Image (tube, rainbow, N blue to C red; front, top):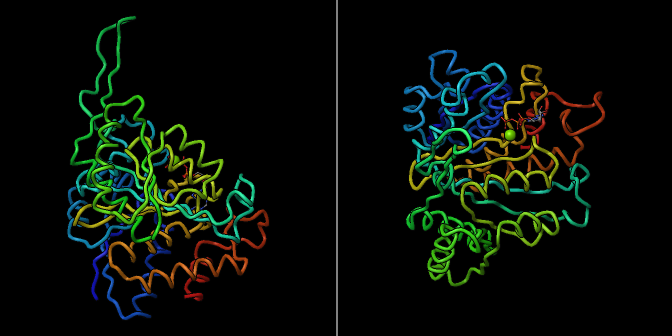
Length: 356
Ligand code: ATP
Ligand code: MG
């Protein structure tokens, strides 16, 4: 089967981890007789440098013509002094909006071999396997008005939290669908004791739940959810929530593992191409040194194979390969104290390919 994949390496370690991904995808195409066609585009800082804008038209059109988009990372100190609307991160926000990527998925999985990296006790994290489904195109990030008015002591700043029934419905339905696929339960997180938007959210959850009579679900207030994620993360399977709550909870949840270099994400639309990227940033401190951990990006490839291409055997093989290299003790520098045995990005990638 032929699949067109847009590759947006971006900044910092982005190109290094994307190289790892294309190598592994090439190996998968060889093993399973698929054809993956890679088309490269600039996004973020590199795009600002090459064409003056963080999201060039050409990049957008490459993405729209693809079956899936793989992104490295954007941003870095070089562009930090630019005004807010000219920053590399604007490119990513723009891309999410243009591709209508309304559902952001962040799985949090504990690898037994890396359990010691977690700041939480062993018995709390053993077996944690949850996914946060965050609404990505609405809420406080985009609500109007957003403005400053008045001067001096009278000055006020306004942000607006708006959600339409339709926007809530489509993300909540995704949440139920993932719970169904995983054979698990859904927790809907809101702040219905305070926010009107959360009260509508709850109503919609109740309605959509009728379409999924076999799925058990519950509501949880966001402050309680923040606490429960640390106290007893095992209780969660699929969490669905609005944009800002999801932003905060997913960063909190990622720290349960203690390994930023391991965690993938997917952002999906209704029918268009999805975007797959590691959750870590461009890591300017180690960029160009060849030591970045490629496993978060390779896990993002697992999600691409699963959600964009429905290649479940291939996805499982890659996921097992990642697990195998960890079980065999292979570590990049971020995962070990022992510098002498640490593998480079390229070496780690080769270990995964061997395991495949
Ligand atoms: P952003 O604002 O882009 O999210 P950030 O400030 O959250 O970036 P990261 O770029 O994610 O930060 O890096 C945080 C720390 O984790 C850095 O010290 C970085 O070197 C390290 N790090 C991040 N990703 C990796 C990786 N794949 N391999 C090794 N180390 C990493
Ligand atoms: Mg960050």
